[in-house]
Length: 191
Image (cartoon, rainbow, N blue to C red; front, side, top):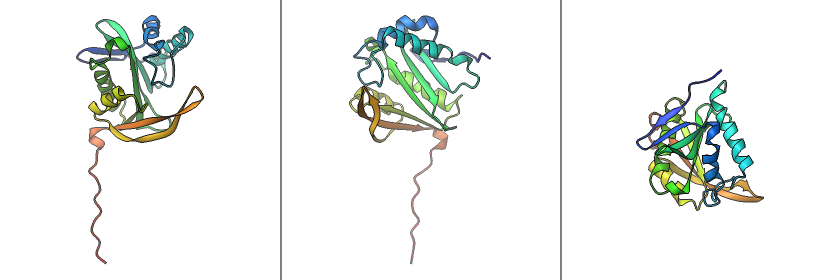
């Protein structure tokens, strides 16, 4: 049963469902060692990129869609992919991530992309909490997350296994504005 296709429109970028014909554009950044240096995957072979695009392209027909892998379109061309998905075992929690071609770095497109993903997570997906992780040395992603209101939660030691090596990750979270609660202040007790 086909679901409605997803299109999220920002001031400069459009996020839409990944299509099979996006494979060349996706491989242009997914095979780049500079782009994937902080990722747990890549640089991709052509077969790995094809598999990723094939898997993403069938998401819109999922019976109960809880993963949105989207193409990032800027000035009429696919310059990245981004996604938001529910986390395993959680009805109200999710995670997001993004990867952009290095030719568009430093233009605020990742910040706009993350904002669109967060809006979709807190809106149509109905999530209350969204998390994101990044490599401790990925200062660009740290800035993107902070600009989108994510709070640094801590360092996850030995969080990811990449090429046989355990790596740390930084954990950031954002809460739906309506779910935020004031800090609990303990009441004074008299003995």
